[in-house]
Image (cartoon, rainbow, N blue to C red):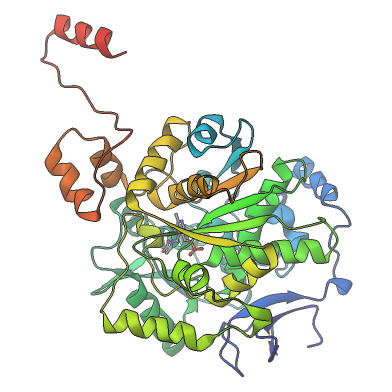
Length: 464
Ligand code: F0G
């Protein structure tokens, strides 16, 4: 490869390269996943992370304003004219002492990286701006994804903002939250509902994209993962460029953990940080492929020589039992994570662990995050429930500095939230009980009062 930026197969025994503009996103020689690769000697990465601070002083330039593109020297694949930004990545790292007390960390040791502040309401915008810019670079006219909601909303927003590309989204029937479907429809995406779940939709969208030459924006697309690296850059920035001890993230298709691992591999390689933090990936127990393979079966990246047969055997047992992913945390209701090998690589580099949490633990953690001041969807709160477990196990020390990534906004799965707080046992049972949630430990029930001033005043004096 003679270019400074290209795509490279992640399999160390292959390392085949293809051009930046290729949109197959699979190795043409061995079928493995691809990385966006940089010949850093021919590019201008910063010599220190502090150098990047000058960007904010130039924020009338939309690229410097964006929380993704102000780090563009660390993802230098797109010429400025191809970049499509809608001001994504203006997110905050919040110190969360109330939540810290709940998970067993000392005050000042837990931070929440709130990605719900993105324009479409989830971390996906970090990756979508990057994939969308690549799509523009290669002249795509149509872009597609399979989604449980957030990816589709994000794609729909970017397509409508740019006005040059049609969004096509694949969703499992009955498997998308109303808030997210509303976004996709309102922003003009062609919405294809198929009889099946996310795993089915993802398999189909890959076939259809190949057949029709449609640009694919699911996280198998390595350009998505380049954008998501900036979530880590913003965390470091907010900590004055200090590296925390742990980054904790929910695991679905395992794009985030793969992207975070790549970010830290590159920062270490460039000498910009001394060491990587540890990574913890939290599965829902009803969608726990990564937990089963990494934690129980001890599947490891092993320098790239991971046991592919163990993965195939695991999927065969799922098929034989007709097992389907099932969790209230709809965003991570995924049994066949496409980025599994990259996630193994990330955990090897960062000394990572995987845990699983029940929907009960997730919903309780979500309520605690919300009373602590930030609103997130269930999948995001799995990270907080995971930290609680890791502290109880003694894997995370109460004095360590931990960052949980709250991947998306509270308004994604409001049915679950309202059912949790509802005083109506039937609503509770219908939405939560059948998923194994037994109690709303931190419920905040609405109070019923007659339409009478004295009664209303009395009730408020009793409860508040
Ligand atoms: N958190 C949220 C809020 C998500 O929407 C997703 C994925 C994940 C976590 C999982 O992230 O794949 O990087 O491990 N949502 C996809 C979607 C499935 O369609 O929006 P991952």
